[in-house]
Amino acid sequence: LFALFQLDWQEKNVMRNMALMPLTGIPTRLFVLWLRLIDANVVNDLVELGLIQPVPGRQIALHPMIRDVAEAEFHPSICSCATLVDALHQTCLYHGLELPYNRWVFQCIEEIITHAEKDDQAEYLRLLEDEFFYMEKYRYHSGMDRILQELTELLSDASVGTNRDRALLLQCRCTCEKNPAVGVKFLEEAVEMFSEPNEEIAELLSNLHSNIGQCYLEMEKPELARLHMEQGIHLLEDFGFAGYHDSVVQIINYASFLVNHGEGQRGYDALKKLARLFQQRNHTQCDDYATVLLYLGIVCGTANRFSQSEAYLRDAMTIYEQVYASMPEMLEEKRRDLGQVLRLLRKREQKVNP
Image (cartoon, rainbow, N blue to C red; front, side, top):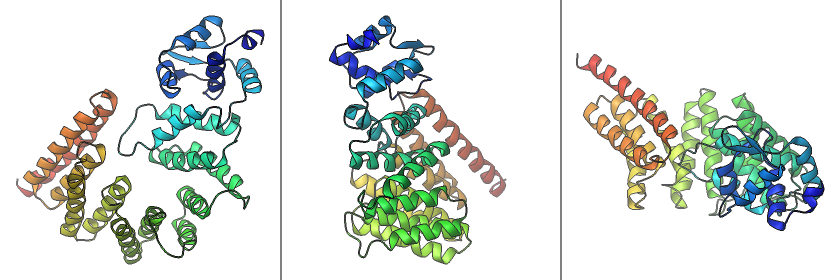
């Protein structure tokens, strides 16, 4: 405790942010990156003082007692730890890029919910909403349940948040709901909160319609599913959001729906149109565009257009190798996934052309 009082402002700031790290540890380089420190000198000095503990795997952590004292003395909050909060928020907005350190991001969000003062509710709401859907991508259900509980409590106060926040809360509830018939009611309630689409809410409304479509698919109501999926895509196109991350997910789902219902050429055309939008924006060296090529390859394979399918898959792998050149684990995962698709494609080709 006496050592804490003698720290300079930089050291106190590091301890304040360390109070929001998981007690199991955080990689030193990642912590330095999130705090945008020039180097790890301050962190190393605190390790030498014994206030921060080194953990195997080049990680650092606080002893629970020291964490309690640091929290009480330095008051970590959304504002006082703004650099850390922004770094975590930006991480979940890296659409179309897989990152290898998601586990620590999710753990830090849970620590912020528990230990940070919520002195900027608007920023806190945005953080929780965006992190929820980032966790969904990795099926981190415990964190999603925690955020859902926190959002429900925050938005029970009518003076907190907007209609958009409440619509997102309903979307979160649908995501955590196992019964699609119940989930679709949450989404339809969210859509009804907005009288007319505009540029500010078009992307949200598009996502809601797309998710309604997925619920109706699970309920085996394909015509209703088609109606809402197409409505979602029309919103993206009308307001200029097609060719971005959310449109990739929606159009791939729609193309898969068409292929599964005997409309393979329409599914291919929808994906090809999306690929052209990426090309027009000169945004072809990214995970999202590679994923579009991957699904173009899959659709061509289902139509027995094998040489065209392999060409798309090779192009997708070339992009993955460039995007994940500095992330060997992620690159290996992409190679495994694409290799499995190629094996299935070749088995199909052997059956068609023995």
